[in-house]
Image (tube, rainbow, N blue to C red; front, side, top):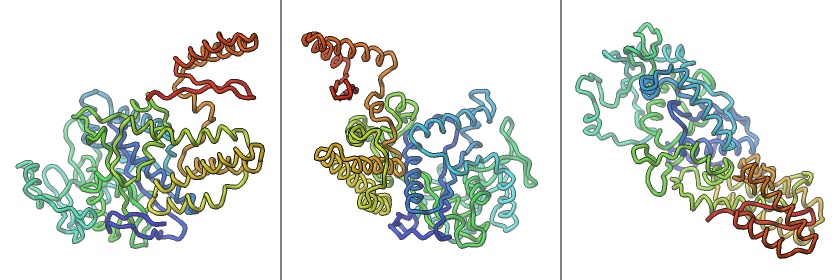
Length: 468
C-alpha cells in the first residue's frame, strides 16, 4: 500500500514497524461544543484508512482521543455554570452518536486527557530534568531550540513579527516558538497536583502522553506507525507533539503522518464567525448519515472539500444506483466476492485511498451486474455474487448495508407512510374494479406528495422522489 506522508511530502510505500501490524493514532475532538462537518470529514477519512488496512490483512490498533481539558472547555464552564465532567461527557456522547450515524466505527482505544494526568506530569518532569523545559510564572514551557529537528514535520516558515504581535508583553518565553507543557492554577479552573506546581496540562502534551501510555513501541525508532488528523493540526499541534516526544524519549513519534483537507461551505472556509460552521447535527436532521458519509467520502481525503447541497444530491444518485441493484437481488444468499472486482477495487484504495478510481470500479461493477441480471434474471449464483460484492463494499466503504426498500423511503414519517399505504390499497382496489380513472387520480395524488409507484409481480412498491 502507498500513502502520502506529510513529512516527506510524497506518496511512499507503507511499511509498518512490526510486520502485519499497524498502530494508528488520530487526534479526536475537543469536547466543548457540537461536532461540525470538519470533524465528520476527518473521522470518515481515517475510518476508511482503518477499514482498508484491515481489508488488506493488517492487524490494526486504532486510538482516537478526546481532549477534555482545555481553555475552551474552561470558558464553557464559566458561561454555563456546569462542571467539566458534565460538559465533556455530554459532548462525547453526542459526538459518538453522530459518528455512529455516519457509519464510523469506535476506535479500539478512546482515551481522555484527564485520564492521562499522571503520565503528563511525569513527561513534563522528564523534560525539566533534561533542561529541555523551563519554568515561568504562568507555567512550564518547552524550549524549541533544544530540538534540532523542530519544524521538520510541517516545514513551516515562522514569521517572528507575526508571532511577536500575538505574544503578551508580560510573557517571558525564551523563544517566541516555545509552548506551554503545563499551565499553573488559576482561580476557578480545574487543577491537578504536581511537584513543579499545581495546574493543568497544555494541549500538545496530551496526545504525546496518550500515545506513550496506550500504544507506543518502546524499543523502535518510531513509537507508532501512523499519526493522523486534519490539515489544520499540522502546525503547531503535530509539530509540537513530534518535538516534545523526540526530546523526551529519543524516538520519533510516528513513522508516517497523514492529514485530511479542509472543508468549505459553498466556497467559504468553515467559521463560526461567518455563521457557516454547519453543525453535523443540523446536516443529520436533513440527510441520512449514510448519504452524508458517501458524499464526504467521495472526494479524496487530502483534497479540500466544498460542501454544497447541490453536489450532495448528485452524489446521492450514485449511491441510489447501488441500492437499485441491491433491490434487484435483495433476499438472495451470499457467495464469494468477484475476484476481479475485489482486486481492482482494493488496488485503487491501496494507492493512497484513491477513492475516485475505487468508485469508478464500483460503478463498472454495478453496470455489469445490471446487464447480467437483464440477460439472466433467474441466475441464482449470479445474484449471490452480486450480493457478496455489495456486502464487501459495506465492509470497506461503510455503505450499502440498508434494506433497499427502506433506503428509498428515507425522510418519510410513520404517519406519512400509513397514508401512502392506505392510498396504495385504495388504488389497488380501484384497479380491481377497473376504475382506472380513480386509480390514476390516486397515483397523481401520490406523485404530488413526491411519491413514485412501481408495480411489480410482488405488489406495488413505492419510493420517495428527491427534490431538485
